[in-house]
Image (cartoon, rainbow, N blue to C red; front, side, top):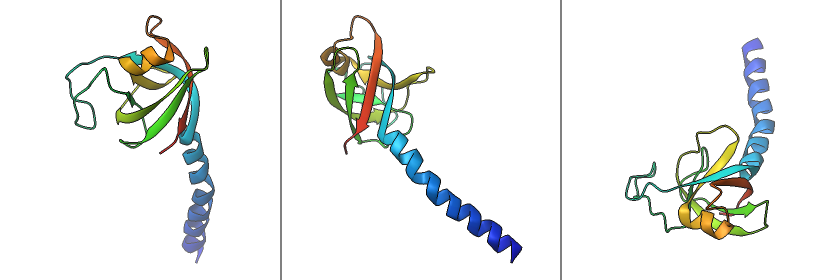
Length: 119
C-alpha cells in the first residue's frame, strides 16, 4: 500500500510539471546565432541549405515550425526545425543564413530573439 501511494503521488505530481515544460518550450527568449554548413547533413538527416528557412533547436521535434522575432528590430520569420543545437550557453536557437538575413543580424552574427511554436 505504501509503495502504491508513493508511485501514485509521483505520477500525480508529474502531471502538473509536464504542461509547464511544454509551455516553456512553446515560447522562449534568449540568444540566436546563424550557421552555414552547406551540404553537410543535419541531425534530421537532410542536407543543410543556407538559403532555406530552417533552424536548430535542442528539444523541439524535427518539422516543428516556430516564429522567431528579433527583439532588437521587431522583424520576424517562420522557420522549420531540422537540426539540433545551439551548444552555446544562453542561446535558444541557431538559424540558417537566410533566416538571419531576414531578421537583420547577418553581419553581427548573433542577436536576442523570442521564439513561439506555431506548428
